[in-house]
Every structure is written in C-alpha cells, then in structure tokens.
Length: 328
Image (cartoon, rainbow, N blue to C red; front, side, top):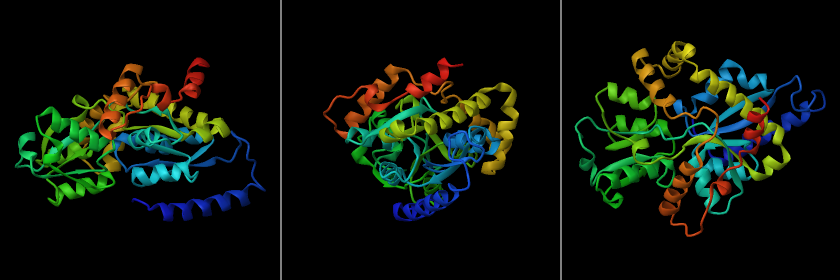
C-alpha cells in the first residue's frame, strides 16, 4: 500500500517517540540484544525487492540486530522522506539518482541489481512495439528507471516517446491493475507480474535490460547517515549480503520457487520463470562495474537534460561494502 509523505511523517514520528521511551530500558548500542527498527523504502512488492522481504522473513537482518520495517510508497515521496531524515534507506536507485543530479546529498551504497527486470507488457491484441504509437503506457514516473526504460525501448524501435502518452501509476501494483482493467495499452512489469501477465495471454514485447542498462533496486542512504551512523549502514549491508548469497545458491532454488509462489499467489511454473528472470539481473557482491555506471550516468543526463558532468563517485559510496568484503 502506498503512503503519503504527511502520513509517513506521522507514522515515523510516533515510532521515534516509542523508540525514545524504550531507550531508557533497552540497550541502544549497535549489535545489542534488542533489534533496532530500521525503516527501508520499497517502491512496491515485487521480486525486484524480494531480497528485502526474504531477508526479513528468513531472519538474516535480525541476525544483524535489525528489525527491518519495509515501507511502500512512490519513489519521489520516499526521496523527500529520506532527505528529511524520516526514512533510514530507500531502495529506488532511479529516483535517488535523479535527486543526486539535482543536488541532493544521497549515495548508492549497495547494488541489488545490475540491470532492470522490467518487461514491456501489452494488451493481448498488441503484437508489436510499433502498435503502441498514440496509445497510453503506464510507468511509475516518467523520469524514473521505469519511465526511462520505456522511452529507450520506444526509441530503439523507431518511435518518438512524444508519440505516446505516459500515465504515472506511482507503484507497480497500480500499473498491473491498470493493464488488467485496460486503462492502459502497455506497461513495464517486473517479475512475477510480467510472467503472470504473459501466462494470462498478455504480450511480452521487450526486455528493458536489452535497451536500458539501469540499476533499479539497491540501497540508498543520505550522506549525513553515512557519517553519523556507519554501523547502521554496515548492519543492513551485511544482512543483504547474507540474503543474496542464499538466493544465488542453486541448492536453495526449490525453496525460492515455493516462497515466490506463496508470496505472490502464482503457479510454481510462473514462479520458476520469474525467479530465473530476477536472478539474471542480481549482483553477486553488491557492486556494479564502473563502466556500466558511467553508461547509466549518460542515460540520466540525457533524459533529465543535465549539463553538469558526473562520475560514479558522485553517485555511490561503496566504502563500507568494500570494507566488509576485505574483512572476509
């Protein structure tokens, strides 16, 4: 369920008040017996953020002293909340990158994905991308990773993005519902929504990773948090590393298929295809090749019409992640 910024502030302030009261009777040092509540934004429940849900359900974050609170809301609202100090982390790299290029003090600290998992999915009667000219395409936001991926797919097939209408759906669930209700002609869906739609007869027209090498999910923190609470960042990253190592282990494949089928109420065959799509985009160590990040920067600058030059060092701070890898 999405949450407005105002409601989020009320929720988090109440949670903060309770935390302060508990501070008088519970140790507050990092790694203490009582887990610390950490608020992490997710753009919606999909396999792209399954690493957060599974890590929480499996207890990997709890092992690091973290009670992960996953809060779903639109990416722009989340970035505003993160900058205001009302969220600890966001997972949406697209909105965060756009914010960084506009002057916000944020950093990517971990990569869950190398490439987007979105599949351009259309109504059953639409069999080619060219048929989307003059129609409505649903995206979370025109300037986020989903919106940019849609535009690059269109351009790659000789269509000027101005020839279609983009409808902002805010979160994935809304985009999927809009497709099913025929409010839109097409949208970009992550697993397992894309596989479920395909099984229902909807047309899978293109894979975003073939056109837009954008990382959509990772971990973003404010630079202030990196300075003031490096232990918090380290604990979350350790939980992510444990979870991703488990996901990548072939021995756990059947467990993951069952988890996806149960969590998203889809058939095991759909879950298996969705898992394969997702794992193909996941990073194994939380990093992304520098040249790939440089390519991302080019795409963002062109889309957002940013004249200022940026380097990967302007977008990311992987020092804590590298420190954890070196200590292994």
